[in-house]
Length: 66
Image 1 (tube, rainbow, N blue to C red):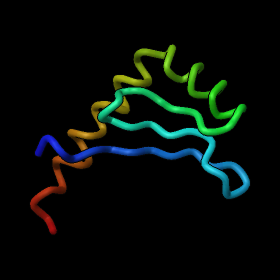
Image 2: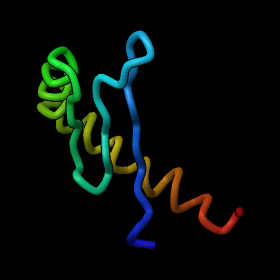
Image 3: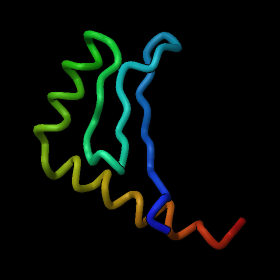
Image 4: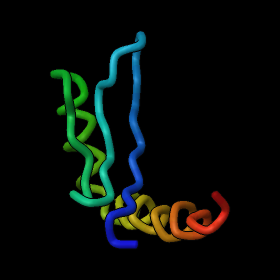
């Protein structure tokens, strides 16, 4: 179960600007705007903690359903 990862991608005009990866535990930006947004979101520790909890709440909960 350790290889399960939760990914949340943010898009603008069909272009991925930033992505949260539960293995990294932070947002990574892919465009100039996305890097700025990622830095802003990564500073909010409660927001990041909530996204980390999504791995357990969403991913691990649904492992046995498939």
